[in-house]
Length: 316
Ligand SMILES: [Zn+2]
Image (cartoon, rainbow, N blue to C red; front, side, top):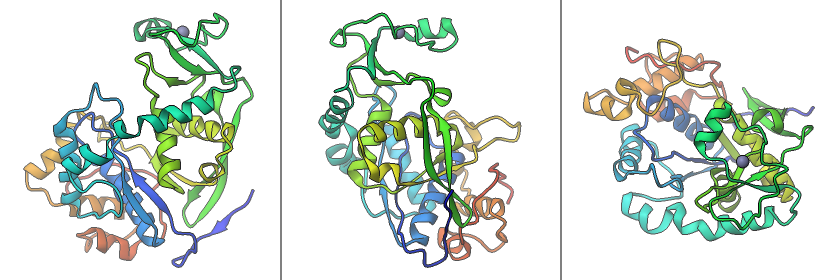
């Protein structure tokens, strides 16, 4: 195992992205993730991309896209690449403009016919089973069948390893792709490239070398690293990952998009200042929080103290 010491003048700038999905109003957990990403980028003099993952457009609504820009504005976070507003996003940055690129990655991925197979299981069918149990592996359904998804065949001993950021260092973490996610979907039944493909293609295209996401997205990390390995995409495999704690509400439940009082929109509407977000993060990082009001205040105190737990307290 190798460990790399980081310091204030860490030589490798982090190029990262904040990548919300506009399928609901953002909640305080989403913005913890944004701010941590912003801190890592600014601390290492890297660059930040705003990427809005709208490929799953059945659930996308214009007010959710608007909410992303209003939330970033409320937080006072800046970014270096990506859309500056809703129209700019729709005209230039929607994932719909990059469908050909996702399709090309998918085509490369399935060149080896052993690793991919068709599956026509409906959502209802999978719910009845409790989870997808690889039932279509041996059915030999034609890949060009309309209304079939494509799944990757993840054999039993499939593992991936990556560099995980841990306080001021990185260490190597390994997980079983089989256990984390199993035979995952790369093409949806509606013919579109699936989230895992689009996310990997975008990270390659935009040159991310640092990926921040919640621990609940470890399954996606393992799927994407495995695909990157099959495609010999070493830039992705060599990225630094940080999987932050999942944000819990007071009753110990994971915050959801219907988070009510914890939605950023309701905080804005009740004139709560964004300082409460930065003080919460400071506290979870062990930084004295009383005098933290802005992102810049927190950045000045930040030296890669990453949080062990995240739970919002609006009274700070
Ligand atoms: Zn199936």
